[in-house]
Image (cartoon, rainbow, N blue to C red; front, side, top):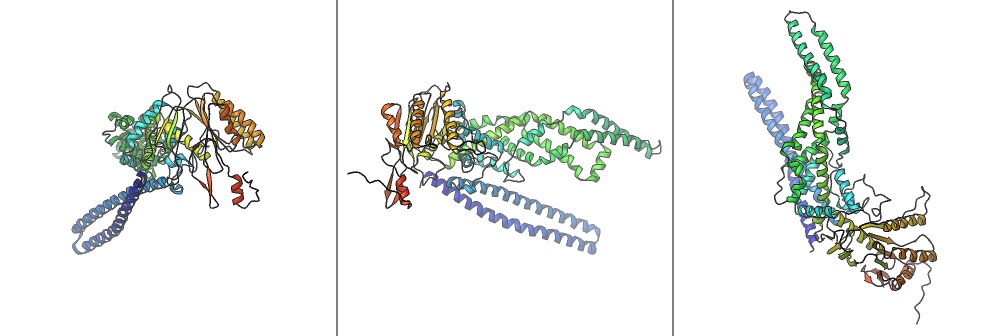
Length: 616
């Protein structure tokens, strides 16, 4: 059993235990539903019977005992339901991890708001974002901000060696910290009314940006407080028949000022109430980060330092905000709203307090959110490493190191482990180009993506699908999946030419980082003669420049360039025909491909093809 299979078996056993626990808790919850009903009906019946049998004295005693008993049952029932909610979310997290190991795509969540960028140097070609992508496989974030942060790391065209080292250290710390990663996700999901929807902080940040300055309500609040005091004094004097009912005039003035002030503040409470779900989620997450013991996790503690500032505890600040909103919720009861606002400037006072609380939080919230997003992206990479213990952390050289790209047992993480074939590959000279030939379906395009995806993972700071991986810092550019555009009037060939021109422009840039390029089938959109002429010229333009890369092609004429250009190296994939079926081993071998299979495939599928017979 491999390490990953052992991890899968452990997760499956954990899900079974959680299912058993949830089944037991659900039965207990159902029982307590009947107990609540029984206590309520029994208590009411007993109290009524006591009233008729023994009078009001014993009635109140029995009633009080019944209410206390009912409240105790309700409280314990709610505790059971909260435990069920936690276990349900936990079970969902583990089931999703099983799906990630199995590459069970229908059960792996995907952010629909994060789509691939067609003009990106490599995102579309390498399946970094979108449906069944590297991002979807790795992304465990509960927030759009964390998900977008991870995507930005995977698609960054300019790697930063300091950040790579820093992220690797954090991911290494987080891989064994499964409870931390699980609780970070669980607290975010528990605090949400809709656990299936990712949390979006943009609306909350926009609300804070639109905050009313605290002093803007200070003057009208002072006026209203004075008028409320005057109203009370005049009303008392009038009730004592000492003065006429002049309090009516001051009361009308009081309400005129109140309405004018509330009209200028807008729907501040309505906006705050609509963000209650977002604030609850933040409180749960931030409270967890404040109280977590960062023992033996110095790198993680450093990242979470903003949550450990005793003078500005996020949970305290957010609790103050929710308390203000709770007090303002009296507006949902018209009778109480009218009573409270008639006696004191209730709404204006809490609008003032809300404005002050927002002003205080405005400076801290972006920092807290940034740390949370960072932790979610780091936790996603750590979960990826935890679910794939056979992966390794790459050795990334700094910008002054010689150009190097060496991988042992390189594989593609989007190919199931039981079908994945790994290869050794390396390039160690600037200006070197590897040409890979092979038959259709032999694995050339997948191998190009294998190289690119592992570079993206390495530069993001995560583990790579390899036994060992060593790389310099490169700018990555690919030309693998070219699409024409009917809307823009681009044919496939013209779109390919534009893409190859952009690659050549990037190669010609004077940059401290060389370019690492991946090209699949140069000029496939034109005829054989022009493709050969153009491909030879283009490859000659790539060789010896500020970059290195790999080109996959069917054109066996291009392998002859190795004889004239020492920086070109040939590799190939091959196949065999066994009992009338094409068999591929997907193993990379040195040298040009000795066979092709297009005519064989046509013949096997029953097309009228004349297969040339070998001579001699």
